[in-house]
Structure formats: C-alpha cells, structure tokens
Image (cartoon, rainbow, N blue to C red; front, side, top):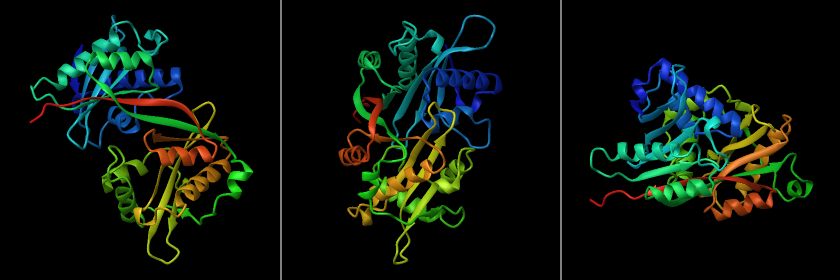
Length: 317
C-alpha cells in the first residue's frame, strides 16, 4: 500500500481516486464520502486540503485502485477515517473483499498512531451494516453517532401543509447575506462537529459548487427588521434515481427557537423543490436529535438508511 499526502497527490493518482469514487457512487447510488472529503480528493488545485491517503492499487499496470483509506483532520484535533472500496470487489454484505477493508482500516489506524500520540479517531461507514460494526469493533472502535437519511414523497400531503404556518422567504444574495448567514449558522450549530464554525472562505467555496442554485437557498428575515432569523438551503441531486431534493442545511437562530420556524422553513424548502419537479425530498439528521427526527416524522419522512461514526478514544494526557 502507498501513503500520500493530499497536497502531493498528483494528477495520475487523483484521477484514479476520482474514478474509484465515481464507480462506488454509481454502484450504491449513494456518495461514498461526505461532501468535504469528496472535494478534498476531487479538487485539482486552488484550495489547500489537509490529510493523507492509504492507497491499495490493483495488480497490473492499469493504475486503477482496489480501494483507499482517507485520513482527514477535524476541527477538534481528532482524525476522521473513511474507507472506499472498488464495488467490483465487494462481497455483498458491506464488508468488501475479504481482508481488504480490514487492511485499509488497520493501515489508517497505524498511520494515525505513527507519532505515538494515539489521537482520537472517528471511523465512518456510509450505509452502515453488521460487517461495518464488526470491523470497527476489531480495531477498537465503538459506535458513536448515527446520521440518518430520511425521505418524504413530494408534494407534501395536504394535511401537512394545512398544519404548517406559512413563512415568507427570499433567495440568498451573495455579498449581502454572507456575514448574517455565517452568524446564524455558527450560532445554530455551535456544538456540531461538521457544520459549526464555518468561515467566509468555506461559504464562498461551497457557493462556487456547480450544483448551487440561489433560488433554492431560502432565507427568512425577522418581520421587525432585526435581521436574519433562519434559512433553508436546498440541493437537487439530478444524478440520483429517483431525483432527490435535499434539505442541505437548515437552521433557526437560537434566539427564535420554539416558534415553529423549523417546520415552516422545512416545508418552504420542500415546496420549492416540488415546484421544480422533484418528487422525493431528503435530508440528513443525527439520530440523537430526537426533536428533529420527530418533526420530520410528522411531515411524512421515513428513515432510508444510516451512516455511522465509530470512535476510538485518544490517549489521556
């Protein structure tokens, strides 16, 4: 296996990695990596990315990959590990080619521990199953967090619409709303490991993505003129079957919690996507966020699958 830093990946290896990501995505109709990690691998310059890859090449001279493990640093000083296998090698139970997924996890753990510091590690499994649970346990990880994907038919049922207070929204305006959006987002997700502490540079990077449609980035202003009180940023996945309309990020300023704005914003986003011909709404939420899961259930959402994080505690200093 080869180890390479992301900023030293080079075009041939990057092409092989992106080709593997596309094969894995097409096989499962599900992203093999979260969006930040995907872009860290697929971006060919401009924004610096930090992390390391453990590459498992196929035998032969075609430069394709059998799989890889990606290690990326988190804001709290821990390290996230994601493993992606060539779908042609998977054995049908989520475990992959016998031994390969284990070898990649083992190599990633050893790489993270190479300086002797034993950092806290988070091992992620997309569409997690029993084989992932067993593998994590073998390497000293315990289940930490379930992120559930929930789906709902669109348009929403009439009784859901009648029970929802309508909310006036408008489109995000770049250059005008950036700072206000960051304040609300970072207040609402102050304790969230991925969505909290966004910077202006991160927002601009995300706004530059080819999928962004500002008409689907909805903001709600305080009717008394006191600024932004919430938002619902949507994303349409037209490469999925069926086409999915995602509630990409949604938040209400903590000062306005308890007034039903979360439900109104969710419905506003789903209605906007339904009006654009989308028939299935989708979102991700932590399974531990019981109030959110209950709200989405009342809107007609059901659980489609689970992406799971496992944790290995770091050394006690």
